[in-house]
Image: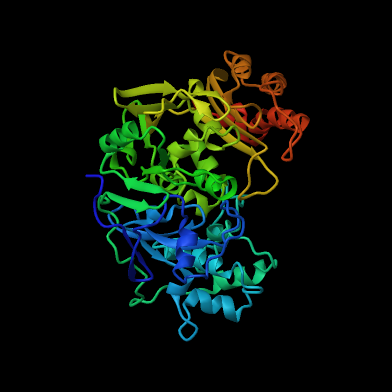
Length: 496
């Protein structure tokens, strides 16, 4: 039934009623209206982390864990049935939480505006179940050859991974004391009430309906119910992680009278392995995908740590990222290189569409208004030589100027198959088919690489904008293939 259970959320141990909340009211505004003003609005688009709170999520093995998320993007109604902890719920001035205490004594809080968000992101990492087992110091952050990884600083002596707070910005440049506070943390006490979220979120979520003055938010029971609602409300907005639509709501005044929450539909949350393909559920968050694959797909393992920030990856979904149709998204170029297909589900059943034919124009696709992205399908076997190159102004939490996914099958020194996906150089993500043709059937040599790089330079129709010039984008396209060769693409490093 549409109505489902009463729309409630547990916040800092207190059960609160969501009834009367508009579908476009974000969690941050709703929490602040309840007097929980620690979380702040900074950027209103998920880049600063001042709004971070902790949400209990399934851990994939029958339990729960804490995930830090951007409260400014998530619809408040989407929290129905969840357990949430804000900075106020971690400790009090008289009894500080260990994270709050370390931040205070080490000078990690200056103006204090960003501090509650930092504290929530740090607390989620503090409670990470396997932190004790995280390699530290010289044992961490190394690649297969033993060289330090350029991705990020090695975890501290306590296993704290600073990437956990890479989505939080300090406007007072107080990063050193914040780092010191993170590395000084111990481990949760046995009787710490937050060590294990109280709610059993691993079970199937109950459906709910939240009615507000401006419209309704509905979480259906299953995919069939979602499709029925979509047929009855053709103007409805499908929302999963809301990391894109939430920005439209905050900065562009987007509104919707009917919102369908599909982030917890079990049919959209499977990660399955078949003999000929991998099936990636559309409602899996990027963080869940990264944990679930555990490096099984090296190309995705290269993409995901560079995708926005942990705050975004904890919420953004696989299907949502493709549904937005952004030409500068990082996931699409990698999936194009992997020859992925989109599984669309509608009233007439399902259909499988190759990703390279899915996008039809700027933020548009072949998906019909009554269809939902059910999953992404990645064919097997995977290419033996892959890489993902993201060109941006910052290492973390930035939008690409150019993104390139490369996947090559090299057999007996010859390129048997090449697939290259690029983003940031056209109105849609696209495959560099001319470059693929310039590689296939030719010996995998530096001469071939440089000749194909000249072709790759001319793929797409890049423009000048605030992220990069067209000339720079073309130069980076060419450099990506040469870089693949230079960083391990020589024949002795390639295994068919």
